[in-house]
Length: 486
Image (tube, rainbow, N blue to C red):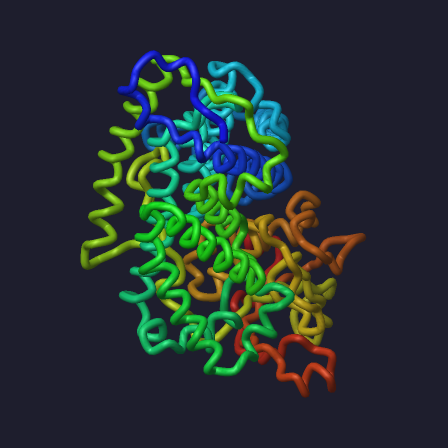
């Protein structure tokens, strides 16, 4: 076992967690991977969504929101080229963190590198508007902020930071469990998974199989979910090996969720946080090599860690109040730095799946024209297409299309711009789609149609080859031309 050396006295012994060096290594490498994924995601999608000519342009947002409302380096300067440069900087630094280069830097350089990642991604999230309004953005930022103070390889892991990571995991799991129990009666009567696998935002390749599991299995799944989210989180703070067992249950549950649907990097970040609760008994054999010795960090670092711990304890007042209060909210940040957030998911479960399908035509006037369908990369469209595996990547437009099917208000700020982009043949916006039926000239009219979708039965899949059965309901947006949208 690695030992702490260089201490002249006993007062700081409680501060170090030398048996958790493997947990720190796992958290650092995997957070580097997730930051890399997040910056790649931003680089690939920002121009059509947030660029100067995007659906919700950042320059327009910056004119309306001040620095205190949305802290971001883009208040100093914005251009699409500058955003791309920031994203590439994040990609390079996160790649260095993922492969372990950052972990071998001097302490001060380690702190600067992780602080840079947090600052850059905070700048993106705070100007990301509706496209960055998901809970996993705040979760990555809060976990990334705590990683700043874990210290590089060779130093003893500070126990307070590991406690804060486990406390973050507790809030994620327990908050999600409470919102389910309080929110929708289907979680209480154990029928939630009769609907969820079919109606979730973006089903995956195995979601249909999960949906067709027997009802008894679905009820067992819900019971297991309640146990994992309402009981297991308390065991995370128990002595070993109980904490290892609790963390292992969280990991297995999150892997199960990853198999059943696409939830961006929500499950992956939760798994990373679970590793923070594991000592070397579980993680040690998986690490490439045990350090020969662990040295204490300087006094200034310990003072910063203690100050951050006090700050996070104070900030925890708001999520705790939210969890124990009668009007619990899901996925809310109580400050613009996205620290001390409250989390939760699927407090309500939709019973029926609706989809908005975009179509275009080259005919000059609406009537008996032939309509051709645009295909998205992740969301259901063509009934014969098997739902793809997207997570831990995130398709932001596809997710918002699911919300639009629930309520048109979700698309008020960007749906007209999306239809306008299709009518103009905007290549940047079309790059977000899987299939453009008008590769040579843009359509003269586009429309959005409203469908009901359900998973096909086993017999229907064999007979028709269709994963989905869809029923047209109405026009979501009637046929419009470029002149109509203006």
